[in-house]
Image (cartoon, rainbow, N blue to C red; front, side, top):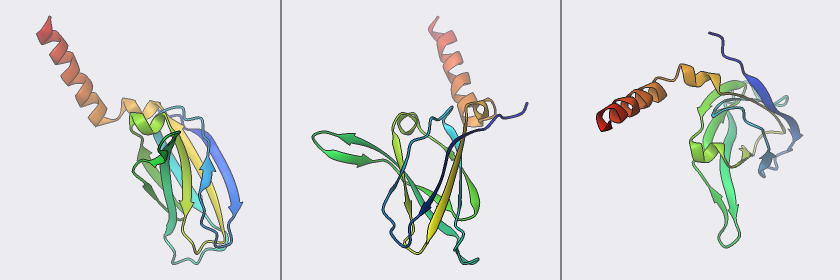
Amino acid sequence: MTINWSLVHSSHTNINGNNSEISITPAFTGKYIIVFTDSLGANPSWYKAGYLLPFFDNSSIGRVYGKSKFCGLKRHTFIKLTDWEFLHSFAFKPVSWLVDIQIKIWSTADYALYDQEDRIEERLNEVYNILQN
């Protein structure tokens, strides 16, 4: 079976050493994503692009961040989002030495068919349900 990936975000930002967060507003089709980053002005020896940051804003607390996801430069990074991450917003925090950053994100729900961890959990739930009846 072929996995169908949908491009859900594409941006190119001139950051010139300003490593403030870049807002990411993708419409994920599933909790499996691939993040690709590139920079035209990057030295070939650089391997860090930055971090994908899941977050939500709370009126009484402020911005609350989840676990950051490292993204390599000129690489595709596969990430499985938790249910919490899937439902919230994202920002990208680039490293300070980049002049520009290109970010592309693809998403799929199809990968779940191959995800061994999910299949094991489903099987355990099936066995549990059978034992309860």
